[in-house]
Length: 55
Image (tube, rainbow, N blue to C red; front, side):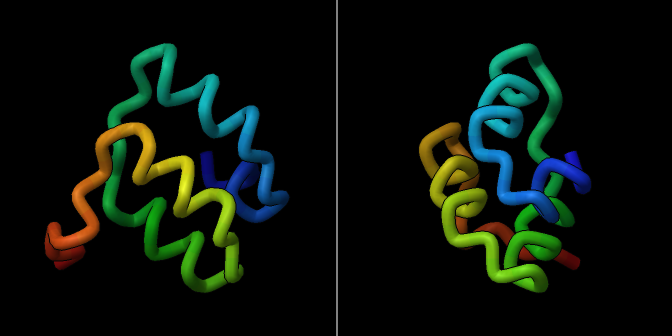
């Protein structure tokens, strides 16, 4: 997942989440670090709670 985020591979991220990979808040943190807006949008579409604390 981290590599998909770094490459901003939204389709791959969607596929991983669809196949049951649990959403980890650290994925969102990585997307913020690499400025992956599309990745963050994909996380939101798949039920990520933006208000959930990371630590």
